[in-house]
Image 1: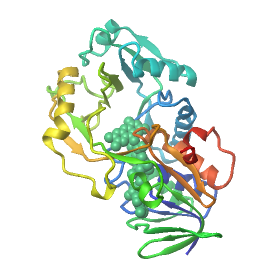
Image 2 (image 1 turned 90 degrees about the horizontal axis):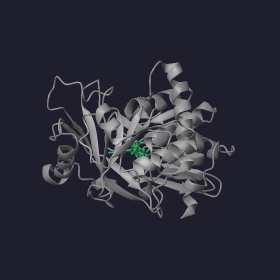
Image 3 (image 1 turned 30 degrees about the horizontal axis):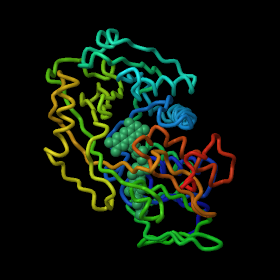
Image 4 (image 1 turned 180 degrees about the vertical axis):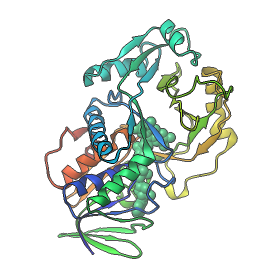
Length: 374
Ligand SMILES: Cc1cc2nc3c(=O)[nH]c(=O)nc-3n(C[C@H](O)[C@H](O)[C@H](O)COP(=O)(O)OP(=O)(O)OC[C@H]3O[C@@H](n4cnc5c(N)ncnc54)[C@H](O)[C@@H]3O)c2cc1C
């Protein structure tokens, strides 16, 4: 079999690359080891936080803006909504990363924000049991993106545009030859000009020598103590990031669909540097839940600290917390090292991968995510 480009791994980054390549009329084949939208990698669990004011790096803002633009266009065609800009709350002491970082990132992105004093914060959001020094920055352009539906829409749109997709097919070798690449699976071998590898936590197994560190990071959902209360519906409890004085912090958002409130703990002690095929998928009540439950008890007294749903998931960290997106070899382009903040950027990263593969000029500076920077 022959192709212009093979995309390996159809999670967040790979599904978007497939779509953006197919959009250009490239003869592209996507290969995914599991089913499309499966729960074994990093992109499942219905939602992710969305922001264009990105405190992780100013270079991320144009990538999130590109995602929003592409998802809006896709939604106009499919009639679906991939991002809901409900606004988000950045909470902490005045010098904390969410507060000062969000303000700085929003100013850099030209995005308007509103400062909330301690009293304004507690009056408007009584769900929060904040410390006396806590204030907030309200970012109206932020919100949530719908992870699994978006990923499936990328793949469906790519197929509509002519891409070939092999789900449940594991790539076992990528042989870089002088004049082509041979992508091997147990059933087929594809002769291609270039390969784009977006294998998430498995990227380091397919492309050795990358400084990547998978981290076990389960997803948790909770319910209000009073099931009749609407305090934790999305409209009243929008996306938030909250930093504590010890550097840890909570993030999450409410929900008005299944009424499951998503909350996670930044800085929690979690296993890392394991083989992703060996990820511990068992949820350990004490090690996995007690630290987060204690933080919820102290921070949201009206939320039941006992989770109603927990799903294993993985983040893949890079040494500087930035992605690895770019050309690794004349015929090999990669995207990975999501460092826990990749979903909101995935359509924009897919567009960059398509541009790099077809040798177009990238729409934004990619030097800070160049895999050759290490
Ligand atoms: C708990 C948690 C919370 C998060 N919160 C946010 C958030 O609020 N906002 C945000 O923007 N981001 C967030 N993220 C990060 C975001 O989810 C990730 O950045 C993103 O999902 C990474 O996508 P990926 O394509 O790199 O990996 P994946 O989605 O895992 O895709 C990799 C794919 O490659 C496939 N694959 C691997 N090996 C092979 C092979 N040999 N052959 C074929 N296929 C293969 C895998 O099966 C998988 O489908 C969060 C992540 C976690 C875990």
